[in-house]
Length: 313
Image (cartoon, rainbow, N blue to C red):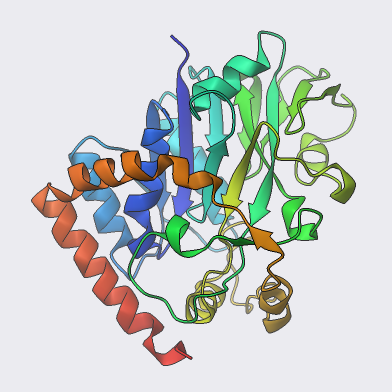
């Protein structure tokens, strides 16, 4: 039986944790492991409750100055859990939701399409605009945000990958596994169904970090990317700092007002992820039936509401 493993890193994602976990359990991931660092909204306590109840595994991640939180978290996950024996490994952030358009919409349908020769499945994102939401409110992200950017928007070129036999790679980055132990060309299945080979002499992070605007396709699958949500949530994200760069005292220079405005340009609707809605609701109900999870989720929502209040429009 094919084993699919999903790993992530989270910081101050409290209100969004349950939906993200429920969604990816519904998609058929056999194991979900989440590292958390420096949380002030109860995200870490909620993850610990989910782990205690058997829904996920949780790894506390103490990040030292100069470390990249995501890379450090993945390394700790790898050290503590047997992810190298997985058939397929994927990394997704808390604002990214895999959305498979094949078969029954399961991750197994996607990897089955890859066949026996493909090493990496590389998927473009579909970035969603804040419209029509204005301020954060409790509820499911995938239901609130259905206005998408144009297919060819540069926000959609970012790739997330499923990788076969992760033990072949020395490191795990947030977009792909990198540094093959034995240098070789890898066969990549792209979202449009085509296949190509990587260049063995070119670092994988350069080839599997971003695609090209003209090649963006979601025919086989996509990951829905809710990277800004509402303005107040976006400002909290700016203050939180970035997970993919080394920890320093410098301000977050990427998530600017211009970044938000550029991603608040809806060009259509994409409701395809709603196919999972009923199953996700059922999984959420199962989680919330656990007293500790329910209490910690409500507490996380309360703390997040207090944190976001100064930034409401």
